[in-house]
Image (cartoon, rainbow, N blue to C red):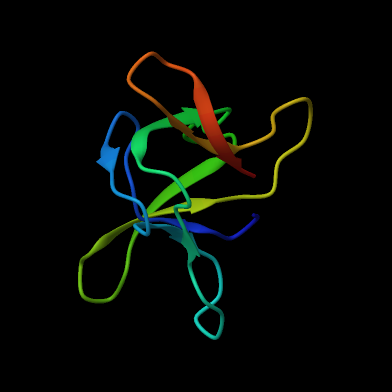
Length: 88
């Protein structure tokens, strides 16, 4: 979602129940329903992604509003590359 803070990196292995992103301090993060490998789709720095540091110096990845045909999604894939779940 727009404004989402990504908690995973492209190619990272995740376990079932791992948090993938959060988008509002007052809301809950999205949790992974399937374990597997993270694949970023249409998440491009400067177009749909902003890297920033908070006041503590911690780097954060944030999905930003975008135009065009890009649809930022986090996909979870199995060992063969089959998409198990997608999180827009």
